[in-house]
Structures are given as structure tokens and as C-alpha cells.
Image 1 (cartoon, rainbow, N blue to C red):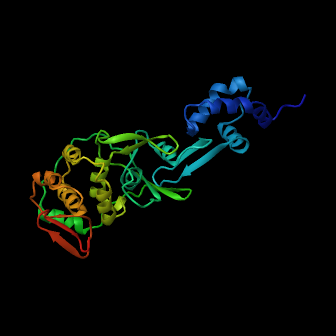
Image 2: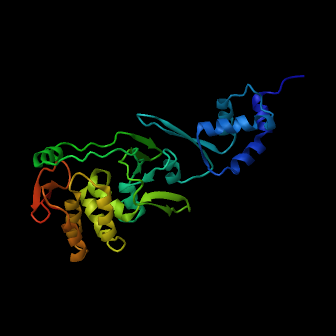
Amino acid sequence: MPRIKKEDILKIAKNDIIELLDNLPSKILKYSDLENILLINRKNWRVTTTTTVNEFISFLLDQTKLKEAKFNFPYRPELRYIWGEVSNYELIMSLRPDSYFTHYTAMYLHEITEQIPNTFYLNYEQSPKRKHKENLEQDRIDSAFKRPVRSSKNIAFYNNFKICLLNGMYTGKLGVVEILGLQREKIRVTNIERTLIDITVRPEYSGGVFEVLKAFQFAHDNVSINKLTAMFKKLDYTYPYHQAIGFYLEKAGVYNQSQVDLLCKFDFEFDFYLTHQMKETDYSKKWRLYYPKGL
């Protein structure tokens, strides 16, 4: 009696395999997930012990709605399998546990930009570290902001968009909220106050300083400046970014004086910069801040 081919056995079990995958809690799977599924169900499906995980996956890719998503990050490439349809947000969040969207992506999700960014910014926090706060000196600040800003090179392309993984400082996910996307999917993202702080600190991840200023204008009706200043204190930055936040609030022209004055309560010991490597600048005496000419 001729032996049944491996693929024919999988075809016989196909309906059972599909039923199982249809009922999984997540439609996004890792290689190890499919490996475990085969291991647990091999006997019930009468799949031969010589059928490898790769053969099982190849069959699913060819014969079912399973799709493969490759992310060629330079430090550690990632591979995901998608069962059916998922949103880009769900797929990207699966790349790192406890990650959340920030910067330009958060601006878009909170509708404080008119642009549709083609880059997704996903932050996963570093582990807690004992913070050694440096003693600031004016010449060190000047030198730092004359140099190019350091930015993440951990970037991959998928379909028509780019994904930038950020390994931000530990905050205990301060200001991170869960919202519903257009497909009713759950999306983790910084709230509007944390977003305004983040984009002030890293405008290069946010469309640049002109886009950041627009974001402060668009956020006016939904942001609490009291909440923002309290959150800023908790983040405990070494650099005096409060001078930049106060400048944006005043420059936006939509906040009342009492809101702007909340940022005046911080110390003003140093001259500061709105962004790195500015060519032509103006200077705000009130905020002790250099900013691009024409802003």
C-alpha cells in the first residue's frame, strides 16, 4: 500500500487546522507559536513526525490565508505570520512587548497634525537604571546642540511604510493610554500631554520644529497644561526642555497667560536651543532660547 505524502496528510487536516487558527486569540503569530501549534496537534491531525515546522508553515502559506511579514531591522530582523487581516498598528506593536506609539505617530493618532506620516515610531522602554544627573554647564549645552542629533538606526521597511524602533528611557509607561483604532483594535500610544513633551524633546521624530509648533496649536482644546507640567517634572530631564515647551505655548498664540506662566515657574539658568544644528537663529530673552529664524 503506497504511503500517503506529507502534504496530502496536511490537506486532509486542513479544515481542522483552519478552524483552530480561526479561534486563536491573536491573528499575529511568531514562528514559535506555529511550532507549538504543530507540536500540540500533530497527533490529532495525524501529521507525520517527519513533517517539519518549515514544511507546515510552507503548506499554510500556500494553501490558507496565512501571510508572512518580514521586518529587516539591522540589529535583529523580525518575522511575523498574519492570519487574515490585522491593522498596521497591531502588527507593529507585536514587534516588542509593552511597546507604544510616540512622536509623529502619536501626533497623527491624536489628530494634532495635518500630515499623514509614512513612518511609524514605536517606543519600547529601557530597563530601570539609577539616574546620575549631570551638572549642566553652558559650554556643554552649546557644544551638544551644535552637533548632529543622535537618532535611531533601528529601521525597517514594510509595504509602503517605515518603522523606527526607539529604545527610550524608562518612565514606567508614564502617560501611555490605550485607544481604539478605526478597526476597533486596541492601540497603545502616549497621551496628548506626553506627546507634546516628547515631540519638543525630539522634533526630528516629529516632522521638525514647525510641525511641533502646529501640534501645540492643534492640541489647544484637548490638552491640560497643568497635567503636562506635572508629567514633565516626573520625567526629570537633565536639559531645560521646559524653556522650549514654554516657548511653543506662547508662540502658538492660543493659550492663555496663566497656562504659559506655569512653565515660567521652572529654573532658567542656561541658554537653550529648540533643536540641533540651527544655521540662522533668533533669540528669546524671556525663554533664554535660540530658535530657527522665521519660526
